[in-house]
Length: 397
Image 1 (tube, rainbow, N blue to C red):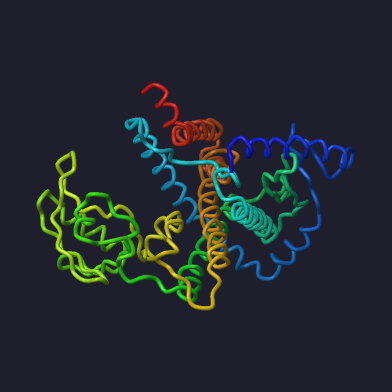
Image 2 (cartoon, helix red, strand yellow):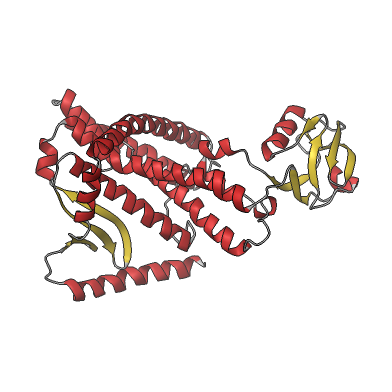
């Protein structure tokens, strides 16, 4: 979508939506205006939260307790990663941003993005509410935040007085529940996608499928063309993309080095050519293949690199429908995993910041406020470097 058109649509939804909401709900008690943002409350979801929490309170408390340990670990890991990435950005003006905003239709696909955000918000906020009720804390209402006709988020409103008086462990369970549930949802969808959907509906290629070759390269000169499947390089079998990348890295090609490629069209002998920096290359420009499942657990964003050419669907399966559903699942994983982690930043009023505040008030009450403020400002500074640092440095390079 054209950027100017997208911006125009967004501004139209915001300005037009604010006018519409003002006309429809002016004077009603269930809406509160926070500047241009409408906070719309309802009691319709409270009964569902109560019923879900009452099914097995012990399970929910155990779930949230485990979530406390998991989220504190992920919080520390996330902060360390952002600091290291901010350091790299400062030292490398050409670096890419370490974080981006998720805007359906602009930075992420429109339909898949909206579905992923809805699942994110519902699972996140209802988890807060379920754990609150399991801890005997009243939930006053549920609702949504609207910027015009654009939903910014959902919320569950527990009784703040009860929550403030609750034990520290209770507060931590409630605060950790939302982000932990998002990460659990992401992992569950990831597992179902990798171990059920892909094996059931596709037959991945066994090797490296060449998509394009570099003009004038040794590969082109040898007669290898796009569509050839590489199954062996020198003495190593090639089953996945990682196998090929590992062999290329270990070969450390120099100009004149001999390379043998075994393909579904026969064996080819190549001689590496020289690049300007003196290194050798053979000239496979783009390719795809099966991706080891472990990579997706380490970096869920890698799901986007699954190439339909290397994961052909089985007979009887509609390719367009399959890849649409797969795209939705991909963004459900990425959004829940990414935003779940983001909410764990020690940045008040995010969940991570509230967890930090709860612990500091318990153990170091005299300096709690200053500590929370200091960590919040530091985290915000590091986050800003990750988001806008590369664009800022390029103005002066």
